Image (cartoon, rainbow, N blue to C red; front, side, top):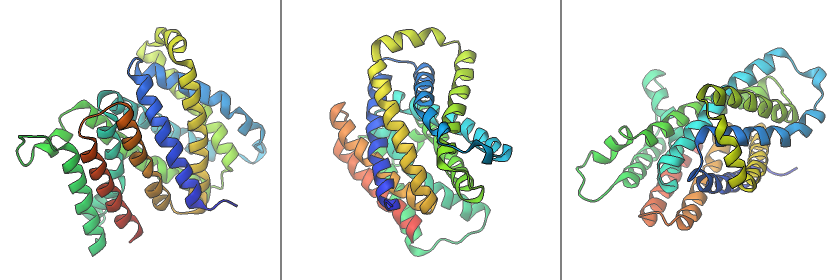
Length: 291
């Protein structure tokens, strides 16, 4: 059996590659029409997982939790895509590394949980990395943090952070506590994703964007779909055999990969500074999660 950390790293590389291609497509396409098209193709590719499932063992409770989780996951994906579209890839993705830090802060404030020395160092590194990431010339000391709450792109990323925290916990709950088989998880999740995105598309009235998108970018969307199926499958196998926190910490290396490679491809500004800030944030995350 493949070790969980290898699966997590595979998921990270595939996820980072998918993010680069998503940015490429989103230069020209609307977020909702793109997300819906991707969800439908994902559903088609995930159909074999349903045939490999023993449907007689699936309960309404499992499906109910998975459907709720899929709704949250759909909105999390939309938030990330909006963030990627409105911000440079190397500015948007590193903020997703903040998830463990936010969890630790909320636990400290609301649950009165203590923070050890290494966790505090990790928090400082996360804040330092975030500060450097947003820092621009001729700014006042607090301006980089103020920027995080002013632009729509940053607000979308923070929305995704909260939603991803919840969905990751629900993933673990379904796989461990409710013993939902991974094949059933993959099949029904992508079925639910497609349903949720189609509803969102109908409400948004962007259905007329689908046909032009298919003409311009069908090959890229199919490639992203294949990458998405495999990185989600790898992540689920990793989560089933290790803690969510450990898997997500390794999964966040997808951000560093996307920042370096995507930043080069799209010729984004201040790339070295963004790479350094991403590394600081990754180290901070590891200190918070592992120690």
